[in-house]
Length: 196
Image: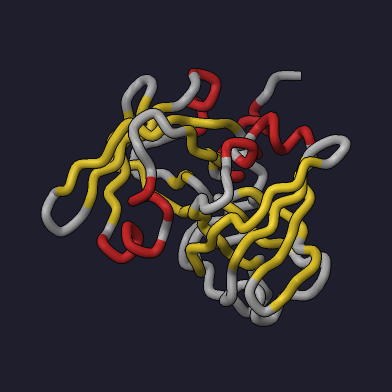
């Protein structure tokens, strides 16, 4: 489980194809400082298992399922990625509950500098709409964000300068795919209300 508060902006150092899936090597120093083999680290909001940890990098194997549902397969050597270690029982939950189980891909539609903050527009597929509410939580690229405006096929988020600076949002270009994860509470509510 994660909070959606990005700890470090890392970079992809290597991508190695496997028989099925691929292995990423991610350049990072903060999230590796106390990481152990097998720990969970979110990469752009995708929960991956850390392997081959060194002081300045870690590797992770990515399954075909993860490649199908997320933007991990679009990364290239040098791509900047948002990184977060899993929470501990004593961690402050400053964002919202982010599982690292990406639901779908959305699309970055652009960002407008509003002076003291940025307004970012994200479009989403129709089946994701049921999990979004005005002022509700959503994870974009693993970042815990609040829906500031909601439309039929897109939403806006207000991004403070610190978030803009320390995440990969400022590297995105219109049309870039982004990982979206709905608030898990919305998914449980939906399941409880389903008719049998």
